[in-house]
Amino acid sequence: MGLLFIWDEGWWHPNSELTLWHDLAVSYDADLLVMIPDLRRYNYDDITFEKYATVEEALNAHQDLTFVFLEPKEIADANGVPCESLTTFDHPKDALYIFGNSGRSNIGLVDLDRGDKVVYVPTINQQQIWPTQVASIVLYDRAKKAWLI
Image (cartoon, rainbow, N blue to C red; front, side, top):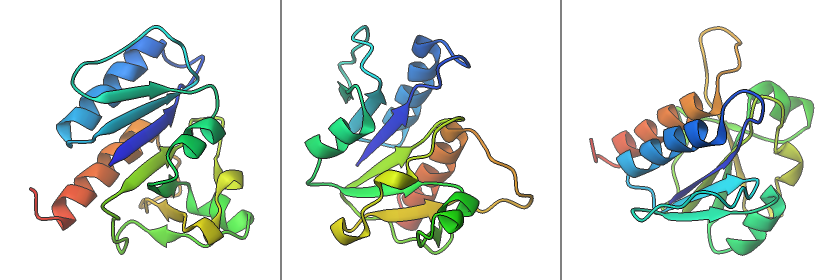
C-alpha cells in the first residue's frame, strides 16, 4: 500500500511536509511513499520513497496497484465521476492512495475503465481539509476495517 502526495508549494517547506507524510506512512505500515514533484533532495531508509515530476509519471510506474483518488465529493460530482464515501469503502490490499493539494485536484486522471476508485471523506460541514488530514483519516479507516487496531 502506498501514498502519493503533491507538495503544497507555497504553504509548507518541502522538508516539513515530507516529514508529515513520512511519519504518517510509516505509522500505518505503508510500503511506498511518492512525492510530486521530484525535488531530488530527500531519501529514507525505512520506506520505499520515490519522486516523480508529475502524477502521470508516478501512475505509469505503478500500474500494478489499484489507484484510489481522494477527492472532495463536490469535485467528483461536478466532473460526473462516481465517488464513494469512505464510510462504505472497501480498501483494496494493493492500493495507491492519491492525494491532491490545496490548489490541485487529480480528478482528470481518473480512469474508471482501469479500475480506479474515487473516495471522499464526509465531513459535518462542507469544508475542504488538508491532504495530510485526509490521509490520516483514510489510513486509520483502513487499519480499523482490517482489524489492525
